[in-house]
Image (tube, rainbow, N blue to C red; front, side):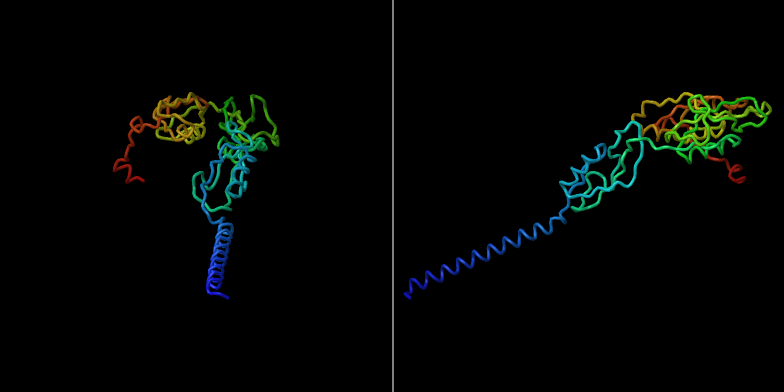
Length: 271
């Protein structure tokens, strides 16, 4: 073999070798890219408000697993859609990560109306709350036992214990009122958040009157966080009949709220 042919043969083998190495290198790169794809991080998509099937399709694009762990029923929210998610939208997670969802149910959950007749107002309220029902109007009628439940009503009609109703149904109570203890004084509801104020008004045998939010309250969340800055009748008003309405005004503006009164030294010593 001539020197020229020998040199060509060497060069050709070197080129073949380089091509072979390059092919192997590319194959390894592709293999590693495919097998480690699950380790790449992705942004969690915003699934809230999206129909569940649509959310599943979107999650498939990033190989995320959706798991429904709870359901609620919120009447003003789209039925069958995602109500909440964890991790939240925008969080960085690895592909294959599980996303836990709370879905708004298509049908309202049901609750069984308990037997409230003969219970006290406070006992009846606890029974309703534990079943997901709401205490409505307090209707007082002459009776020897003040605040003893005489009847339970839904939409003005008596409802029998054991009846199945939607969770969140409002149950009104007909209560006894002895004229010997039919009057009381009005507590101070100042600085109470909305739900706490409503609960305390009911606990003190009053009905909720007009509720007014000032201009600082702009959203539903704001309304829950707002605090009472004014009430009618005023705190300390005496001789108010049980079942009377108490109206409240609420705000997020700290400057509108009454000052916090610190206890005096004599009051502290008596505690």
